[in-house]
Length: 282
Length: 282
Image 1 (cartoon, each protein chain N blue to C red):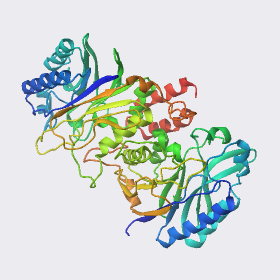
Image 2 (spheres, one colour):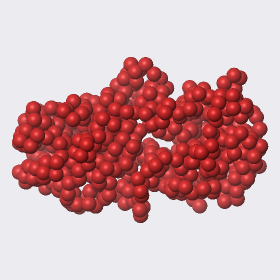
Image 3 (cartoon, rainbow over the protein chains, first blue to last red):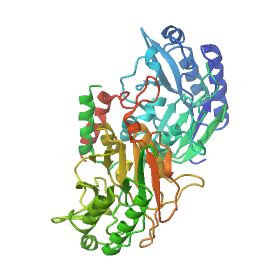
Image 4 (cartoon, rainbow over the protein chains, first blue to last red):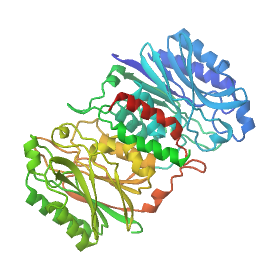
């Protein structure tokens, strides 16, 4: 491979069984390493599972950023020479966050806290207030956001403007109906987000029914043209996808001899959006 | 039909032949009306064709907003009881714009000037400096932008924030290679733009080779879930698509019992984008 092998491990976390989920993490990361991966993305809330029914239950699954899951991921990254991005249920003081850790051989590089909370998540999690993390690594600049964050184009734009080459997104995409022959809408939005920003995106979904909720099982790695390099279908169960990502390509924002998706922006005109947002009072 | 029948007339304008292009406009709009359309979208630069080779040549094709093409569209709208959105090469004083007119039975409602100029367009056109037009009509609030404008999520967001229900986009999508089985990336981005904003989008492409340039020929009408209601394939030649659009659906921004794509935005965090844009000096 001439680029950076990036993997998404689409595993099936077990709700509230933190020890089993650590085993899943260890097995799947080792498996991805054996496939040659240098960057490994794991699902959202891998440590805990997703479908909580109460604030109390969610809190019971929380662990600090120096707790067992992040420590395990750091050890795996060190032992296997990897960069790992994985979701965990973060307890910090009195607050719970839907977080993702970025670890490499040097230890914990960053924790990102999901800023856009989906549906009932707002009942147990506090929303993050920081921009998407960008971590300079040996293979390139890696940004992180989580699931529903991807649906806000303003949010995907931020790390792209700041130079991110690969956006790693732990996700848990709940399955929903779609017309025959259509790709899941979540994947379509990832494709668009990658192409308008000319970055790579690796979205790692989960598998396994949980309290009646099924998942898209649609992990995908998309190139700066928006084409899936690996994954991109639904219902693919537990498995790992790997794609060779020439991350340097994400530095080139040109799309024709005179057009460049970043240089062609009209930021002076977009400020009106911000004003409208502000007047919306959110 | 229970909604508003919206049509896109994918015609093949003839470069520099303004009279023939008016005939195409008249025939195709009448054809769309006979199919029951209430809103008719026509391609970008329908009046003139697209592949200019010099500023002089482009200017020769320019006409004012009270010139023959817009006058024709207004007459058609009045006679047939339609709302028509069509692209034309606008000469205004000393400047040339890549514009779209919105006309209805009451006359010319608005002219939008393309703000994001694609590739060589910048050699002959002046970029518009106004926000995407939103026109309140009998059938709902209609917004207009043109082709490459759609590739800037900030721009698509603006009319959605302002309440637009249907975004009409005259386009000329130049054909480019794509992997087998993939839908054209331009359509994927339209799908994503519709779904993250929960609006309808009608993008009217063109057909016909012009100076060696082929077009996607991929006109599409997409619903607020991002699914194509009509069109969405490439290479479909000269034809008209029509879809029933329940424009009221675009007023509902909810995507789950607690989630709403507009209410869930974090505008206070996106201002950083604007700052970065400004410091980019564009």
